Length: 76
Image (cartoon, rainbow, N blue to C red; front, side, top):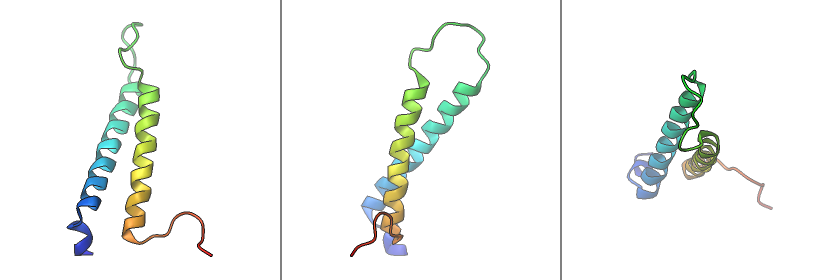
């Protein structure tokens, strides 16, 4: 278990996952705020939220595979 935390691939994947989770959380909070004016935002939040959510999901699956949990099809 301690050798997993010293692996640079694990640390980079964990950093990507945490960054994506922070971005998705911030954008979800931004979308749910009540609007004070009807001017559109400079960056559309919904497509950015979906893209970072997908990247975060891929990073989570990669972390699970590195931990030893088998995902995907069963090998024959």
